[in-house]
Length: 443
Image 1 (spheres, one colour):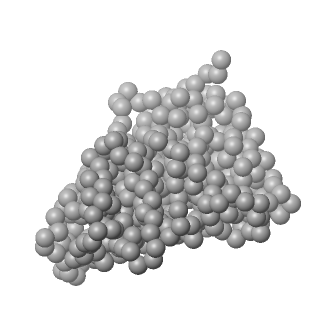
Image 2: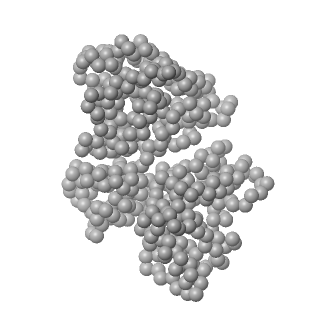
Image 3: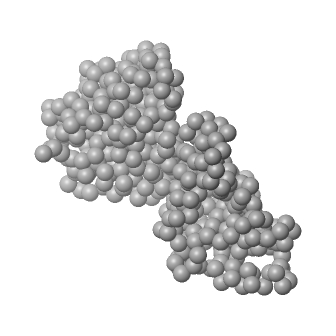
């Protein structure tokens, strides 16, 4: 049986909801985690204040578990919050522990990462029974290795440098260590996306994907941010509810940037600005596999005609289902017809009527081995997380390879896209929350 000593404070400290999966995993005995998804530099509301997510993580680790927070990145080097420890005895205790394990005054050369990961591995597995804060409570460590895709990158075998191989092996063995779990320490790797960290490392870590802020969190953030920027305003008839709807599932920092600009200049923020910023965020987060669907082209469009009557009636009845979460609706619809018959306009009109987030799906093909598979997973994972939504693929037979064949002229990229599409189409968990609309000339 593996002993665990979480050393929780007598008063339970609250934390932003996005951090709860990390804390729950630690309390379950998981001491080595891989964090992906949301940036740790995005903003959250913590104790009524706007804070970077990484700062909230540092505070909750210190208050709830008595952990000294140590960060490392190639650009920033090692940071152990020396200024944040006001008691000189606490600073001395933490500094001594870091020095003993070779984590201070390191030369900045190509072996720095290896020295850091080796020192983190040794300190995180060391017995901590004798380490105490000045008030007598147990002292533990939380290590955050930022931009892990740069420290232990996923590269083809034989292409890694010797330093990268050593760092990968150290990270793997430390994550598997029973001594780490017994110590009560916590080691966190953070990467912007799944599949960018070497599989020997990622396979040994507990994966946790940090979610982008949903409508509930976004509303809390908007309320807090408008108190910080009281002069910020929106063009009529843009309401707070509409701002929340337009910015949900995108980083809070983007909204804060717009509010700060409005506060400083007195300029009212428009719908087009919010949509433009959201489009940029969606493309960046999805790595260009998704774009926000522009529904303005159908604002004054009224589709009529014999060919339109039945599909228009069907799609009108389906449009409100994702917003209601009604599962009694198809998860995917294919509009078939010759060019110029209004298929694309009909699909976009349905997305506009749904009044939920609407995304255009782009081909996830990549030119690097393994890149296509990773982008496929990212694309469908984003659609699954960002519900309710409508996804749209124009001319799906051209955008996505759907025929099974022996063609392998693109090193399996087309097959990977086909496999991902078939897997997504068979997933019933999103029915009633996500609607996929596609068009084709030939069924």
